[in-house]
Length: 456
Image (tube, rainbow, N blue to C red; front, side, top):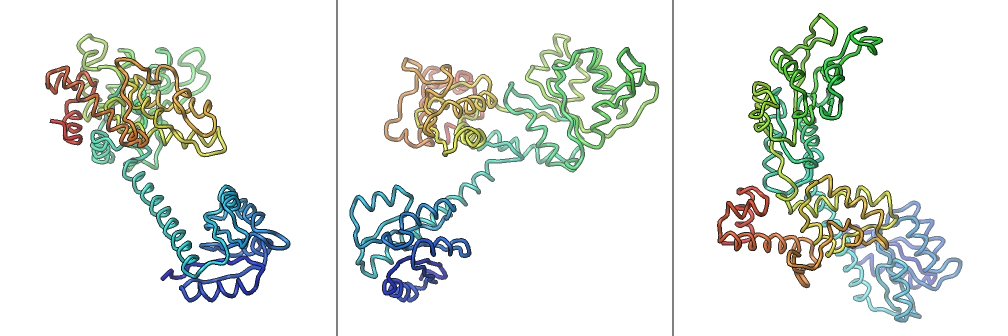
């Protein structure tokens, strides 16, 4: 039966309350009663009900007023309205106000039980969907990084493998792919998580100040050095120092950084004494450091010292299946700040997001969604909310609509990916290596997608 589901019956007719109470108790429900809407609202303050049956015409407070008051209190229980004066217009009005269902009096026992069973099934499905979304979010989330892409899942495994080690890590990836997020994941997942995480962008600090920032200085070391100052290495002692854009570090400072990595001690600018530091160094760059080594822009010995273990972040173009996941994530983040009603991304908008090349990667997607949240009306993220460079335009390079299936975001993204892969293979006469280059994804990612879509 229905176990211990708790039902509130609100009706001014005592006979009706008694009849429903006896009938539903026999069906296995727990039953509570109220003679009017005001009494019903009072009971909501002290009891949690699974379902509510409410008459419309009652003295003191009618059913519609009760319905409005219950929804203002954010009551989650389905409310089923009842009336002997029912009409289609009345039923529609109640549903618009927020009722779950409407039933006309007089009704048979089977009718009311069927309505309750339907409501019970709906609540069960809602709870199951919430649980599945939470499970999915956990499966596709790692230390604040969202992805269901195979290459990213492998990256998560590599992070777990080296998180506890002091090994220096080099994170490579285009601008906007989330290199600092990876560095933070390494820190938070490892044994140093309770120690400082200090980040610095080597390209954002003038060359003459960067040495002092990293290693500190003593009073009088230079004109503005009015007191001793600890550098970032000392601030990160016991924890992690993240050197972003390491490729922008000037050559003279590269020599000093190499010495710190080899000896585990720093010397403040203008100072004579050395100090031991226990710091795990993670560096990142969007540059091709191996090419910089060849050209003399970057020291080879430092490159090998930093690149003990390398983590390569794929571009957003190589993880197209993550676009809906990330878009929904950013929608929740920025939508709550700009609109009182829930926001949704229209299928045509999602097709535009899926087809864009994203030169700015995840950062560009985040900015686009934040902008769309500001510009949208009526809770709908339409293509007009996106920058013109992202919108799909009619022409030879536009991706064709997927027809009725386009109402499904998952089917739309699969269709777009499948079409682009087939076009690339046709253009290269089936050469997968060349097709991967055209698609701007790795050969490994292409093979994975060919298998996934059953493309020969």
